[in-house]
Amino acid sequence: MFKCIACQPIFNRNLNVYGYELLYRKNEDSVSYDAADGNRATRDVIATAFTDIGIEEITGGRKAFINFTSDLILDEVPNMLSNKVLVVELLEEVRSSEPVINACRKLKQKGYILALDDFVYSEENKGLIELVDIIKIDFQSMGETGVRDTLNKLRRHPRKIILAEKIETQKEFELALSLGFSLFQGYFFSKPILKSGRRADTRILSRMQLLNEIAKPELDFHKLADIIRKDVVMSYRLLKIVNSAYYGLRYSINNILHALVMLGVNESRKWISLILLSDVSGSKPDELIRMAFIRGMFMEKIALHLKKRKNKDDYFMSGLFSLAGSIFDVSLDIVLSEINLTPEITAPLLTGVGEVADFIKVVLCLETAEWDNAVEIAGKYGIPHDQLHDIYFESIKSANELL
Image 1 (tube, one colour):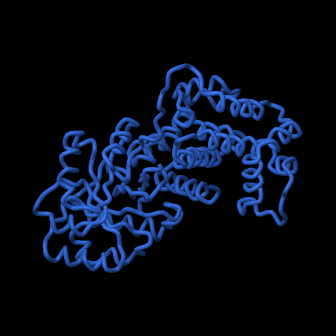
Image 2 (cartoon, rainbow, N blue to C red):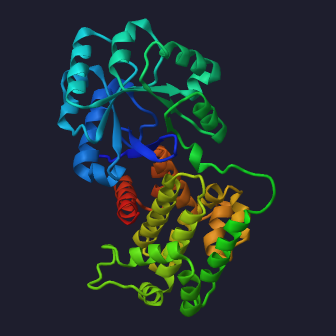
Image 3 (tube, helix red, strand yellow):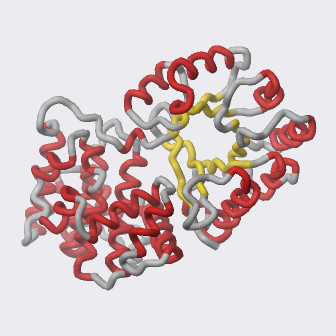
């Protein structure tokens, strides 16, 4: 089976991840969702996510929004999955027929959460509106006037959770917040909010100084340990990572210097960079750090697949820092100009040219379900689609385990 699944995050008002919508394409030639084959698409999503990969490894234990057609609702397919994980998302083609209403009522009685996708208000769908818990409104197709008009009509149906879908900019997110939306879906959080001035703030710059320290060719573990010891959060996180199941140690390490020596130069650089990016992310959601880490893990696994073991750490750092502009809320070239990373790491990010840059584009395509572009680029380097998606899901699994 062609494992074409991407998970788009859904946030609450505090920018914590509430769940993920599982996006699916039938094969590497599909460029959009094929509503005519919605039954097959959903069955394949379920088989791939819950059996082939494992839903916990994809969503990290959060809710999974999956599209369902009328036929699948009537066939009671949602009952195959746990109501603790699944959100039954009814496609826009689902109508309020008596059989569908009865089937949805049974799902509600069993504790399932129901959502209406691509919602357009209609008196004919009043029965479904009354039953569902979540209503998804598409900001891009409706526009602000349409959104406001729809919200006014929904006042007749109180106690609904309203989800703003396809939020692509910070401005749209702030508008949705002001209108009273409770959930938000889209990649608005992964774009920097460019502020006036040419530098990041002083708190961020102090963290950059530590990044400069770990970027030096000769890492001084004693000096680095002295810096880290003064930071309780940094010390805790580093020791937690070293003592995690990922490294499988038979004894616990409680000394920062010992931890750094055990990790070695390259692993220390990797983990300290990740912790620093996480600490300076400010009001950005944790999902942004998760995405950055997935990109880093993906790039490292690509390097190993291409038999470039000596370059795997540079690949990792390029993936990790590909979202630095969004994390620091300044343009990427400013971030990279203020930290002393090697040209092997920064050049692909700034120029968009070369093998490393190509695989950064690949992982971006995988995140947004642009399978055709991802497969085309990876194919130039001899990586077939099945291996590409295996590498991507292994990266998600690794990131979820460690974060």
